[in-house]
Image (cartoon, rainbow, N blue to C red; front, side, top):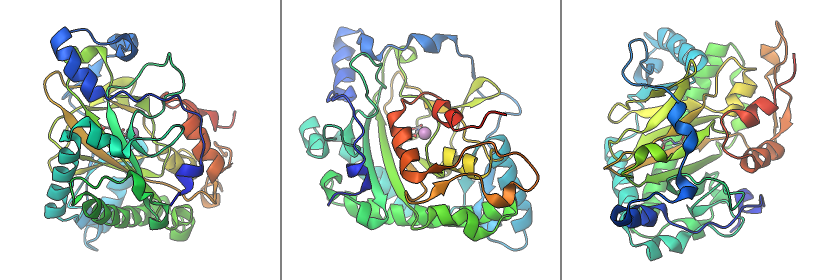
Length: 359
Ligand code: OGA
Ligand code: NI
């Protein structure tokens, strides 16, 4: 069954190389192939453990508790405005399920390449295992093998790209997908409360809770400072939940012009605001640029779950937020937005900035 993603038809260049295989090869011969060498990253300062640079922590159990809710909603709002990122703890997703998600994903990536290629991305396709966002033969490549899948609404799934090995993979992903969709719906409601807008107005574009997942496998690289796991980008969705499958760090976010390393708390979901929420909130909530760096010795695995607007809506600043001020973004049709996002290279905030109205 083909869903919306399969019909999107963005022109990509085929690139069927596995980075894991490249990483294994250069372990013996040494040199990182030029297509992966990122000369631009040297110049960037990175902040690790600096005072005042702690990702805000939001506690779902406090959001849900009438006694603490108001205080926690204010914290949530502040995190979305000033950081665009926070760690969600006590999110209610069962610990056993998280363990199973981690085990199944790790097992999939440990399979021989031929087995992973059973779900390989098709030419000009969007879903499946392999390199994504490749538009030219010259373009630099990210140091990641990834598996991208549409997960919700359920009729959008194309099971041809869902691994059957390990045998529990599909069932586990199905359960995880539902849990996160529910968490996203709860957070959207608390955000509406913080913004002072009608819940329906904010939740409307997210009707049916469209969701996709991107499972990232970053092989180690002995010359880790030459490569990038994921180019700087913003997420073209409402909000993203990132789960660390193993405990290796590598996520960095752009803060006050510097790159800041995120130290994920065990069991927490790292949540970030995407472009669509920035637009809906007329810029009040921020979609922050982020990237992934590579560890010299250890593989790193993450799963990002994207919660997006459905395609048949108009994405534009919410009317209720415009009473007092200027409109900062043009309204755009959902299909046009999604096609535009996937056709733009992962280049920081460039696509989002292109939707801004001149002042
Ligand atoms: C993503 C993403 C970061 C990471 O998949 O969009 O930003 O650390 N991932 O894997
Ligand atoms: Ni991202």
